[in-house]
Amino acid sequence: MRIVLVGPPGAGKGTQAHVLAKTLSIPHISTGDLFRANIGQGTPLGLEAKSYMDAGRLVPDEVTIGMAKDRMLQPDAAGGFLLDGFPRNLGQAKALDAFLAEQGITLDGVLDLEVPEDEVVRRIAGRRLCRNDGGHVFHVDYNPPKAEGVCDECGGELYQRSDDTEEKVRTRLEVYHTETEPIIDYYAQQGLVATIPALGKVDEVTQRAIEALKQDN
Image (cartoon, rainbow, N blue to C red; front, side, top):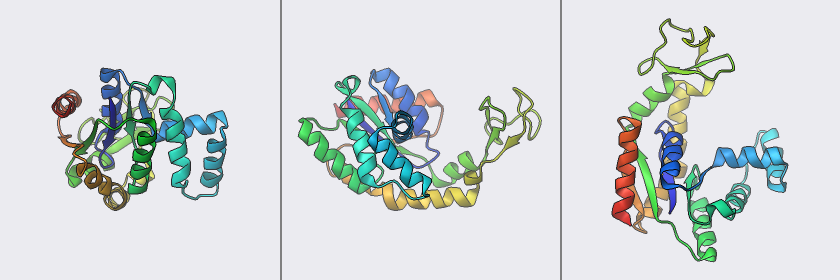
């Protein structure tokens, strides 16, 4: 099964991608992992991406597309994959379609995780991270620490990431609406989109996604 997962920041894409990929026994391919792997391995695409990132510039679509193509051609992706964070815009979506057509395969579905905008802001702006290496994460509403500003696990200081402020989150949402939302309409015209309400427990959202995929296939 070949699936694209889309949704605004804070929709839980990473969590759902991990669970769905494991449930469906297909690799989870995320743009973050692609960049880390290529840069870490010093591949030509990784070195090119790093040169842009080091200069504070956006990595061109063709570099991201190249990384995604290479990953989808790996043996473990022969039976399917779940794409998370790619395609991010209409140009990438069209490039993905062209690549799949070259391989004689097509997408099976596009899962659109739907979350109200105010909930996205609440989810992200309420996150607090531990400064120590444990990577513990809390939330002022959903998972508050016992003592404000202090990690329950190690006593470390909790902080809010600079890009997790409400202002920054709303800016990220504007970028999502402008750049990524058009791919939902693009895939909807192909009859591939299933919109999944992403409020509720993780397993409830996963079950909705699985049911939607069953209906589409």
